[in-house]
Length: 435
Ligand code: NAD
Image (cartoon, rainbow, N blue to C red; front, side, top):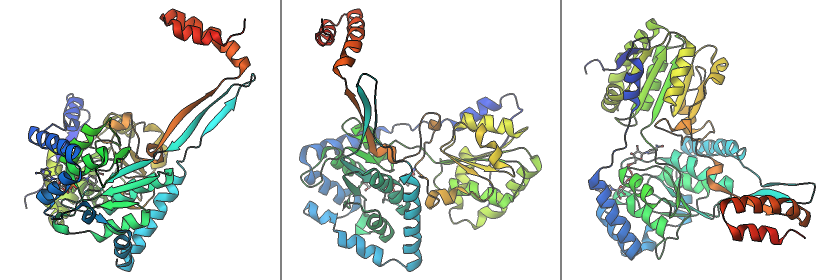
């Protein structure tokens, strides 16, 4: 294998920021072939429900059944998958689930209210969603960690019913995925996928109940379908390719940094791995580690393409400059790979998750540290947050005005309503004001 190509940049170069912005730019371009296919699938499922879902499952997943019930997995099948796992896998899954649950329990928001001196009570009522659909990808690979990261916050929030869909091409079920569903207490599981599964959850079919929100990642068909059903149901987000940014002060082991960049790059060819480092010698060492370690990676082709496409090793003058660039990038994952890492946390304003110090590698957060691994991508950490319990809770305002309160608020509301020319508003407020 040739020496892998990864661009080297220097933040002092005059064109640096425009080069960086071009590197970050990612348009999740719409492929009209996919969009047209999804239009047809959504319409068919909406019109004929189970019949269309069964037909598309036969066509795309080569799973031939004549009624929808055959595409639902009984609870016993989930439990059997859990019981049948090798002990080490079962223990790892359970420990990861416990840690993720413990973390998310701290995110629960309670209802609150307060009463003013005149007896008016105002507040916010927090209610879990009634029913949520969880999409677990299963076309080409399986993602048990996705089950944990999506199902656990929903359960902690108190969601009434959690319905999971996971395609099982050729009928091949992934035991870890089913075991994760058993551990997290998913209520129902259907072995369907793609746009037809999203449509079934969004519109409901004769067998699959309509949900209120759909969460979970998937391929371009799934992403397009989720975008299109938004409004009929809520969705979590439409995620872009995964990203890591490592800030290094030149301390630590260059092999570790190289492998952390690989860990992101192995996801897919559009994943983004960037290093910002104050030490040119350390950048050379990381480049040497990349060349040394890559040939032994089973996914070396994907890694090499991803690093060449969207990766970069960037020399910065100092750590303040690195933090400023990090805030511009607003990465999904940020590793502070430096001696005094904790001191720099306060300089970071925009990142999905911050991994502090040499021991805090992203892979631990991906699977088991506790925080959610569903994080904002494509610079959206500037305005959005990791998936959490709050995504499965909604808020209702409470307004309980006392008679005395109506005397104070009525004239204010009526005056403002008059100003807007809304006479009925003004009158309804004034009716409550005593002469
Ligand atoms: P998938 O479950 O998303 O898609 C499989 C389904 O796609 C099939 O069931 C089928 O219905 C549909 N499909 C396939 N070809 C089709 C066609 N020609 N026409 C219509 N429908 C078709 O599984 P996947 O394909 O393995 O993709 C998983 C995706 O999820 C990957 O892109 C992966 O990167 C992503 N992912 C992201 C995260 C994250 O956290 N961001 C985590 C896990 C996976």
